[in-house]
Length: 175
View: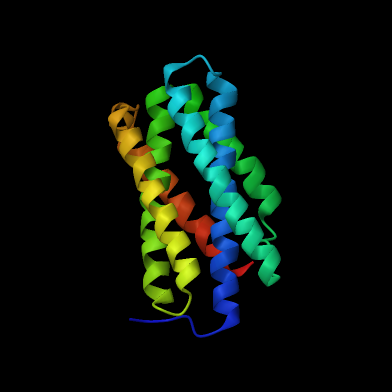
């Protein structure tokens, strides 16, 4: 099993995770702004948003403890995440759920890679990532159960959102 070899690699990992959790929080904020709290899907989205906030709080704390700088794209992810959430919610609850499935598919891959990279080098961080990964997979399962695959142009929307996630991950690791 591989392990992290430098503080720079570890800082990059923490930075990208914080950015991702922030982006997820903003996506759900955009969806809830459009849907309101009375829509049946809002209950699931609110629950997922609460978990994302807990994930974000944990990575914010780790960044402060370890002196890790946030990505310079933080203001962009603020706007982009909210816009993605609002746009998918405008298309309907299935599209909002399709967004969740696409994002969580990439996050699952991302967190799995990180767990492999960490190996035994950072047991507390690994445990946190594993816990959050399990919750992200719950989000994906919920979104599928709530009709994500019935969204208009699901394959195209999913592919576009997944590509956007991969780009955001790559950029936030480095910059």
